[in-house]
Amino acid sequence: MRIRGKVTLVVPMGSAEDCEVVMRSLMPDETGLPPGLSSSIRCDNGKLVYELSYDINSDEFLSVYNTLDDLLRNVRIVMSSLDKL
Image (tube, rainbow, N blue to C red):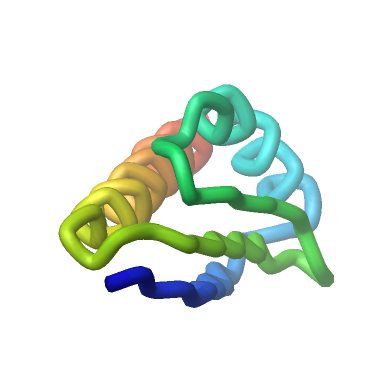
């Protein structure tokens, strides 16, 4: 069975500058996503907005979870690094 959907995550950042740094840091990870997944990432008023669209077989749904998990893990790492500057 095919499933389609879209997940939008909005993460408040400390500032618009921090958002830009986080966005640029995450961009390389957004290439080479599994087949059937596409993403976009942008800053909007100091908030990081990540959208993940998927059109996959139901047995591939774990790839959606793993992609979101990787993103959140990487956001946390970059934000932690920014806090130490």
